Length: 170
Figure (tube, rainbow, N blue to C red):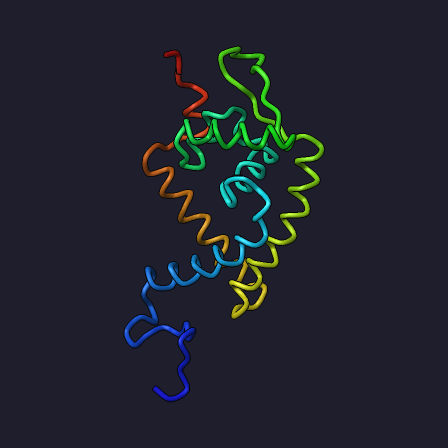
């Protein structure tokens, strides 16, 4: 049609209120932008999430982090091995449970996270660029609330606290 391009991302007829189309379009744009920001990290966006979570203090060990991020525990181990080899994180026995490993950012990891976070904010700004600042904040807050609601629908507890309470002896 006249005026359309191959990259036209406007909603097709009947899709102007379609959550799947909207989320898919936003996610594709986000992932395309974020790839460049986190290209130097092994595991790309997953590593950025791990660094961010380690910095947040919400999850204290790698099992909790894997559960919280929806990453297979074995894959999480390999990812942390790579991040530790780059001296971005360190793992030490948890003083409360010596079988568990606490994951913390190193100074080098914190510095890199701060640099990457600026790039991530720019990608988010681009993805939500059609909205004003208040609308962007509302969308982000609403999506986070919906995501938290889904994680709570499986269990009313914080996933990090649930994993922490489990006896994970093999």
